[in-house]
Structures are given as C-alpha cells and as structure tokens.
View 1 (tube, rainbow, N blue to C red):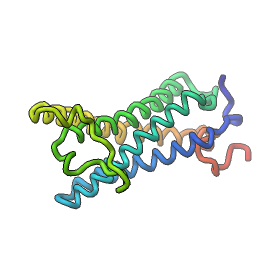
View 2: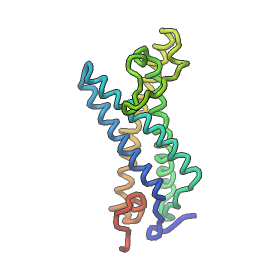
View 3: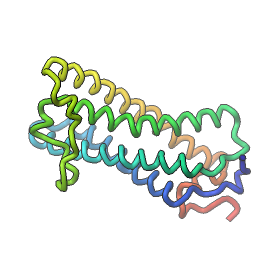
View 4: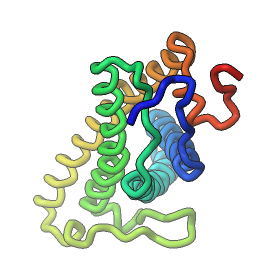
Length: 198
C-alpha cells in the first residue's frame, strides 16, 4: 500500500525514539573515534572505553529496533516516489540495519581477540562488565592476532561506509523530501515538525 505525500502516517513512538537514540549514539561514537586518534596513553584508553560501551548500546538497541520493525511494519511510503528512489530508500534503510548491527559486532570481536581485553574489559557505565567472546580470548596468540587484525580492518571499513556513504545519503534524502518535494516524509520521524498543509 502506498500513500500520497499529504497523507503519510507517522512512525510509531517506539520507532521514533529508537531512531533518534541510536542516531545520537552513532554520531557520538563517530566523534569519539575521531577525537581519540589525537590522543595517546590513558586518555585514549579512557575514551575508547566509552566508544566500546556506546557500541554495545547501539548493538542492543539496533536489535530491538529490527525486532520492532519486523513485528510492526513501518507506515507506507509515498506513491510519488520514482522506482529508483524507492530502491535507494530501501537500500539505505537496510544498509543501516546491517551496519548498526555489524559495526558493534565486529568491534566486539576484534576487542575480544586482544590480550588487552583482560586488562580493559568492556565496562557498561561502571555497572558491570560486558563479556568478551571466550572462544576468541582463549585462542593461541598468533591466531588471536590474526582475528584481531582482520576484524579491526572490517570494522574500520564499515565505519567508512556509514560515515561517508549512508549518513550523507540519508540526510540528503531527508532534506530533498522536506525542501524540494515538500512532503511529510521528514515529519513522520520528527513529531514536532509541521506537516504539509498545516
């Protein structure tokens, strides 16, 4: 089912909350990763502890959001979209799911495959330690190093895709809908945004 721009339904409150909380966590984690490149020693370690903590939060919330989406289909998109716009929109949305889950997973893997995990565990806001993947922490050192290097590279590649690909596409698409198409697409995810015709 499709809808005209003026009749586009809003997303459910749960979906809106998850969208914006995850978005803020991802943006914050990108900032932490960039800033940590300028640091060394204890300052860098402390900041990266936050990076790991927020990454686990992104993973858990993204799994919750995916489960919610599968059980509660999102509102229909505008029937005015061209086929290529529909394809791009679906590709970007599902690409986000892959990376929102894949990025923290690969981070969890390569951090677990490091001898430093026993010194600097993933502390969840100082309340408890998130478990390392024991099948990786028990690997012989040469294998552990290989797993660490491979998944660190995959993690960094995924980060580049989301930072330089998906986020710009998502933002540009939202701006296009708001200022060129002048439809309710952006208002469906921002509750206080004025809807078309109001």
